[in-house]
Image (cartoon, rainbow, N blue to C red; front, side, top):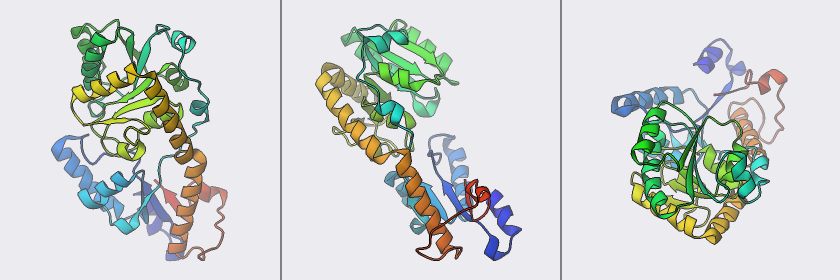
Length: 312
């Protein structure tokens, strides 16, 4: 809407190009049936204001273009997530010292669930799967790093399943590298995702990942190569994948090493900057602001989003 108001007050030659990014995936699973329908209608209208809509993965593009018909394919650009991963890529394998630093037993096998405690993330499904793991692996610990409205339900479920000594609810953490340093397996149980940050960071840290095959997750993880994907909605396959990794440190190391190579090669901040720079140049060319092949230089105000481009 800001872009629309801006362009309505400018002559045609001075109007900005508009780039809109779908970082998450709100088209289903967040707001119920009626709410999701309303969100999709709003997104269809707003998408008409954008020169390009950026998505993070091929599956996200398929949802926007084919499943929900939010925007024509020709205006969608795939720009995978890019992060400052150096802190995670420098982490050594998990060890006793890293575990004791955050209050965990030094000999624990640590499964970390990192994220908000909300229904879309399904922390209760993680607790259900871990109950089985706790029964067969006495040194396994579930570390939950995050908070949210479901925390009372999570706490009650942990007590009901007699897992109080095995599940650590760490709350909000602003120092995630120490969490990953103590982690053996990163777990994701969401019903819907775009490209989850916790998984990208865990992969860069060379940690094995178990994740539900939802949203853009299968574009991030190659099953049995850079992590393990499990079907959506059932605790049994999640527990089975966790059991497989706990039983095989060699498999954890192999998947973690491959995950680190993939994350640092494809999800670095440098790659993201280069992709966005090229996309902005394409938008400016399509608007006739610069000639094709010409270098694009922007003033400081334009770099902040005011001028030839507005990125939402």
